[in-house]
Image (tube, rainbow, N blue to C red; front, side):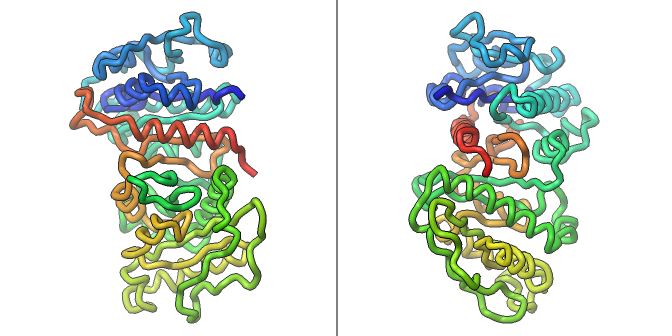
Length: 381
């Protein structure tokens, strides 16, 4: 079976993206997982290879119809020249419109290749939001940009750790994912924007993704629905009246996080759990989704890492990011849910403070490629 053809964007040329990608391309594991093609700039990638002391050569490809063919120089890494030459002049660690434009152009080109079927999936290296805005591209990040390019309205960012990641602490059959209800916005505006429908949308996306992941790594433990540990008071989700379907299509166990300390203590510390979150859980369970919550966040991620849940739906960005990155910063992968294409990414930023110094690690890139390859080989239901 032919390995999936994955497009890797180089990210912001002033950040660590190019050198992380060069280090990844020098790692045999990347080639065992995929047939990589870089979307970016040949000159920038050549410099990045020198920085990480990688013995790599690059072959520019200008015609996307040749993407599925090996380059004339079979030992070279194919690069689709998708960004302007100004990218080669960007200063390391500096915010600039040129760097933001380069990252934007690479992301757009890679997404279009995937939408048009020229590549099987994309893996993105980080962009810098300030540089992106300096270039006049007013997107909060990759997630929202790709959703717009793909024409989808229901989407989510998921940070993901595979089974056995984080020094063996992730024990779920299909790993652990954190899906974010709100994303790149202020905390005040994020809380104000929470709604039952928005949370329900993320629960559905989490369920759909983990049904897919559980097909890749099925486990008999998932043949039974998880118990609902919540008090059986008014407004809280109750157990499903009937067992979930048995067989190969296991039901993911989705934990929905609370917003307030101690899940609001029945309204003493805020009533969002009763008014907004619990109704979303109840609606999800009525649809046959094994969702429970709202769970107090102070113990939730320890339980999830131990395998009690497959996915957690977090209410705000840092609620999910901090917990998962503490569990396994270097192993984490960013996956965009709801797109018609496969898109994964490293789970770190541009790290301007260490850019172009050869200090950045590339383990997250290998993990992102592995997840992308697995999703390509296991399409949606």
